[in-house]
Length: 66
Image (cartoon, rainbow, N blue to C red):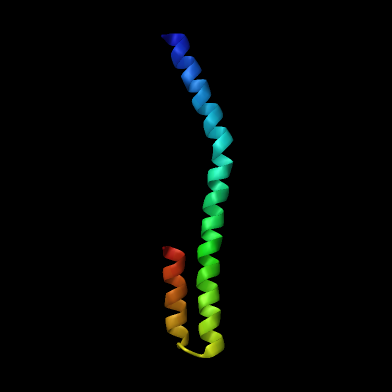
């Protein structure tokens, strides 16, 4: 059983180190997407003068903290 445990631990480590960068890149892309969505909506409201500055800031804060 010791061999099987060692093999399982080795496979787990290999899979973790192989997939971890992809998971981190995915999280980064999601974060950039959320920021981009918030900034585009914020820029749209600035351009069309729909909201005041405080509302834009709070909207951006909610997009970041989501």
